Image (cartoon, each protein chain N blue to C red):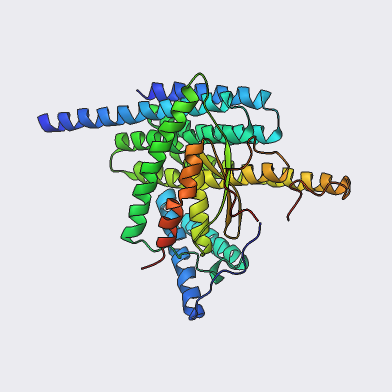
Length: 101
Length: 174
Length: 115
């Protein structure tokens, strides 16, 4: 019965990859990376029991940590990039949601 | 990140400070022992070292100057969790119905409102609870001003009714 | 002996139901992320997987694990996911908002609080 969850998770990961490939903005891609990470954690937890290897749970927790930190770091990177572009463009358009930092 | 400097500090700060350090140290040590499961001197020393590094880093982040453990585990908190769980199940089914509907009947709405809860921890709880409930998403949180994106008008109405806000701001009252 | 076999059957059934429901919600999140028209609506779909999917799947595995260290670890993973997933969703939505990606629809009818 673990196979149902494993297959559903794998299919969802494939769907997320499709969205990552067509996703128009970079934030769509970050969203799918985040989804992919959550799916990986679930998959690892299920496989730990499917294969009878409980030490996979430690990997799942470590992956959850890395996924969270990684997404935040990538977002911080893109945020600083968009702020820099805003500055380079000069102060001619300061209306739409520029950096409030 | 605006790490709010207006966080309320309490009067007997030295004792509360020490209590927070000790609480975090105990939690970290318990987590290490639970996860490693080895009781060899070298591993235990490495664990003590990592706990010390985390405590020093937390101290340098001024984490102990604010009441980070401000959440009181009262019956009210558990009632809130029960309510939140029911709400999550209800709105998950709602979003599932929308996603599987061939016509995709969405009507994205942006709601702005001022929350009643004042404590920073309460605001984080409220913002995260809104995001945790499928169908509503916290877009921005500026002091007490929340901007929430809702998938349907129904979800937007639920947010504007402010029941979650009321429940969260009641968490701290006794 | 009879009772233990019965309890095992009941537990297996419960965990099977939880796992299947979890798999269903995980799949719904994936389909939603593909079908929804823009970023913010996609995030709503993704949050179905992050909450219902994760809770149901991990609870189903927890029922299988019984009272053991594995259950504690699974509970820790679940707690961690429930804290971090809205936080990273908020970071993503806020970063997208700052970058100027607009939510598709206009504001709600009553804007009494709007400055």
